[in-house]
Image (cartoon, rainbow, N blue to C red; front, side, top):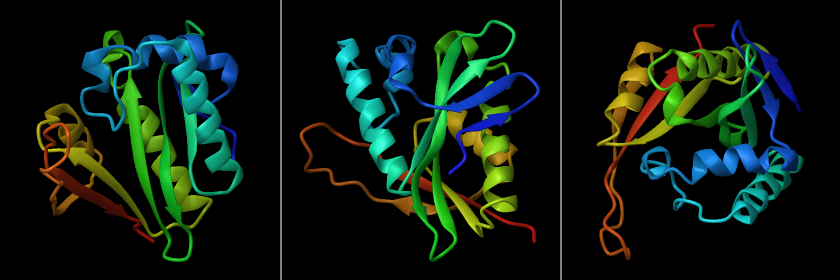
Length: 176
């Protein structure tokens, strides 16, 4: 499986345990994790555990996550990747996060575009999906900008310990 992609301003490199300190700083920001399916981290070992879990999923060809590295500064500014693959059906689910100081500068768009193009051209996937909370307007705008289509609502279990928002399902199909 691929371990690196390059864009004009970014390097997407498969996560490594050595990325844990930088990723912990991002994943411990409640504004960043607000719409993620993780709780805000409180200790760096949580980032190490997450990176190891994601590596195990990658080794099993079930998912892959990349650290997003800003080329000019060399800093890790977020992560992105595929949360799940279904190679039989030719689909994958995409996910992404960025440090707040990098929001609104086109980095998420650049990273997601690179992932989608690679998945369609190299893996020959037919469709990429994204699940986004209904309140996550910035992510919804990003997906729409990149040509993702709104497919519908995935109702969440309201009996959970914490109230959850419905998820909107967006998808983008290959143009081939």
